[in-house]
Image 1: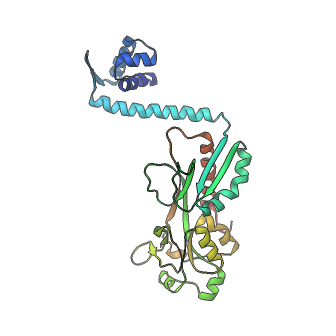
Image 2: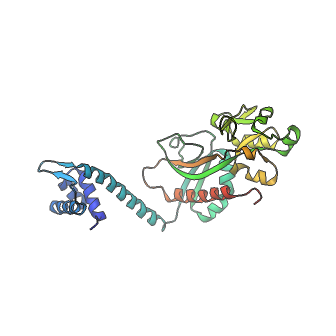
Image 3: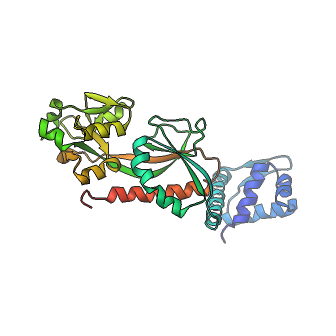
Length: 303
């Protein structure tokens, strides 16, 4: 016979309350009924979970393990119930989103019309910042971050990943030539980032590895600024797929050194503080934008 969820709840309640009598009051049963539930649970599991005397209770090693696992199971059941209940509700309220300018402009703004049609009662507040922000200080529900995460105090949901392309405009290549190998880049004007040196490690295979460190001739804090510099023929850049795919399709930018690209993909995460289950409006947005990013990842330049 298997343990039931109500037995798990009573067992966890006894441990958290510190006594059978306190737990009995909490769950609205008599102490003897709670005690019988514990005995029945131990009989089903064929092990002792609690060493009980007239003065104290102590968890056995098996009891400690079962307590942690029971809490996880009950939490998952609560989350499942809340999620199923929320499906019957209409998402509404203010949703404050923060993202770097390139992601906001290329991966969110083009889909706002569709999102608003699907969820007309969600009131969006879109803020752009190319630096990592304090979510509480900025009153932000979720922030979209590109690249590896370092802040362990935040909860995160992966939204996918984006390839990186080495690109330049046809006008630049006509004037300065097209690099045929990674080493050829040293003779070109390279466009890099000022704020995050990791973004100046391009995903190119060469003799010392698969991340080639560049020396930028022109640097900017925003990827959108670098994109415009590339479009204006000012140099060669390394930019995300989601912000360059339309430029490449239109012929405004040309992909370079594809045979040397290591295939590294930038992780894209939504980060947030979470003390309870996510609000429905946040769930809806994350599901929606994750689907759009998947479409970006699958898109072909000639599509």
